[in-house]
Amino acid sequence: MTAQTLQGRNALGAGGLEVVVEHGRISALTAIPDPGDGSPWIGPGLVDLQVNGHLDGDANAADPSPEHVAAMARSLAEHGVTRFLPTVITASPADMIARIRAIDEAVRASTATSRAVAGIHVEGPSLSDQDGPRGVHPLAHIRPPEIAELQSWLDAAPGLLRVVTLSPHHPGSAEATRFLVAHGVRVAVGHTHATDAEIAAVVDAGATLSTHLGNGAHAVLPGTRTISGRSSRSPGSRPGSSPTAIICPTARSRP
Image 1 (cartoon, one colour):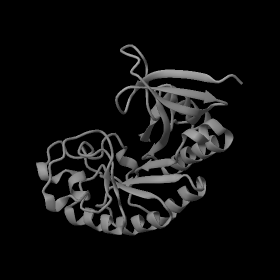
Image 2 (cartoon, helix red, strand yellow):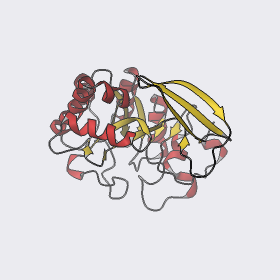
Image 3 (cartoon, rainbow, N blue to C red):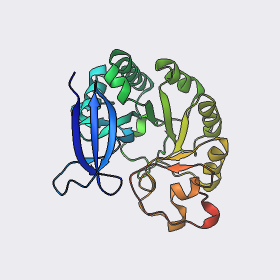
Image 4 (spheres, rainbow, N blue to C red):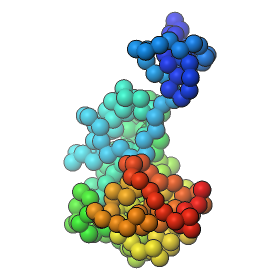
C-alpha cells in the first residue's frame, strides 16, 4: 500500500506538521514551516465523553441496533472525533439494557467501531425529578439507583461501562457510587438538585466527574453553588463539558 503524506497547520502550536500514513496508521510526524492560511489543521483526534446520537446514529433509538452505533462512529470521525462514549439516557430498565447491548454488539462486530467506542456512558435514570435539573429525561422513568440494575449494565456490556451520571439526592447514591467505582466505573454528578451534604457524600464515595457543569440544574443558582463548584471539592474531580462559567470559593475547589 502506498504511503499517504498530509501537510497542514499545527492545531496545538506554531508552524505546520507533515503526517505520513501507512496501512491506516501514522508512521511519521514531522514539524514543518507553517504552510499558510487555507491549509487544513492537523491535531490529535477529539474525545467526546457524552454522545447521545449523531446524524444517522442514535444510541437511544426506539429500535436499538449495532448499526446506529457504527453510524455514529463514522460520522463523528468525519468531524475529528476519534474516540467517544455512546450515551444511554433515562428510560425503562428493559429499554436501557437493550441500548447497552446494542453498543456492546457494535463493538464486538467491527474493529473500526471498537477503536472508536471508548466505552459506554449511562446518563440516568437516577437523576433529579424536578423540572429544570431533569432536563429532557422522562419523569416517568426517574428512579433511585439499584445495585441489581447497575450489575445488569455491567453484565450486558462486559468491560465497556465507563461513566454513570447520577443525582446524589437519591437514597442509596453513595452505596451505588462505591459499587460502580469498585468495578472501574467513573461516577459523575449531574442533572441534580442535591444539597451540599448529598454531593459531598458521593464525592467521598468516589465520584470524580460533573456532567453538564451548571446547565443541568435549576435556571438560577447562586454563583458559588454551581454543581461543578460543589462537587470539585474532591482531589482529582473533573467537570464535563457544556462550558459554563465557574466562580467558587477557594475552599470549595482543589486543583
